[in-house]
Length: 362
Image 1 (cartoon, rainbow, N blue to C red):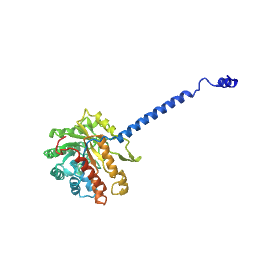
Image 2: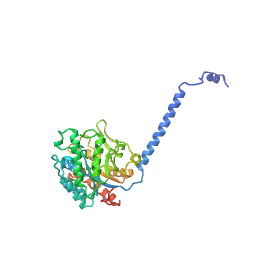
Image 3: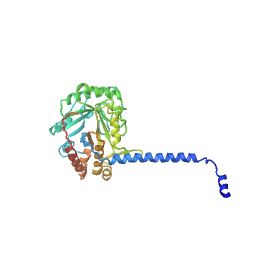
Image 4: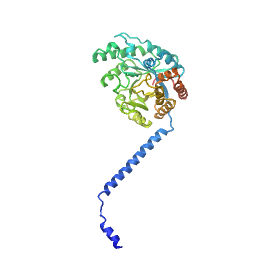
């Protein structure tokens, strides 16, 4: 060995103090990279998965939302039944509509909707309670707004009892939805109250043996609160949403996430369905009246609708109710029939290929 090499070796430290930390850091980086790679492989596999389950697609229809859009709500409703050929409906029984004065009930609007659905062999999930689909979420009559909450709750239970007694003779009703996302603190509503919800459910079950549906946010909930109380769990499924802190964003959730959550509550419920599948833009602080049409159609269009329907089929729950057919009709009335025509084509194709008996109970 040369003297020069000996000098180099003699000055080389036996242990570099930073070697261990560097090795640990490198190992952590490799492990994190591998885990991230496995995650993204899973995401890609989920989103490219070819297996599409048979799903019956229906729609939520809100008279109030149709009116908000300036539509003739009856004409839009009939178009949904006759042109889109929707055979599964979710219809809210808005408290402020059916009890305009204390103890004075008028169910004619919902009766008309049920009559028309029954003429066409369609089935209905009827939603009752104070918190129901569409903003502002809670629909107390004007006369109830000055009452204390305890008395309001007594009135709600009375309204639910009267409504179920009135509608239970209807063969088209396949399930009762009690409240809408009652554990999700959203809208102009009192805080969630599990015990009161249990009272509401008890009123329905005492009067009729058809299944009860409780709904949850598909993305912002574990689903356990609702699953522990209900026969059927309904969840919302949104892909592009708005948040006041970060604006619009795409939910990075894959179909397998929903499937695993369904498996986690399978011992508690008969089944899980999608009661709210995004088929219109999430408007954030804007609405159709002030949101530019081009922006609306960037957020929801035939291509994105097809993606959402494909997503729901890969989730694999037996039923999915589209959210936004009123908006499709509004677009059609304003010279943009693309969403209506795309939805019609998809619904007829998909539901035509699924064996379904609209009047069959869950």
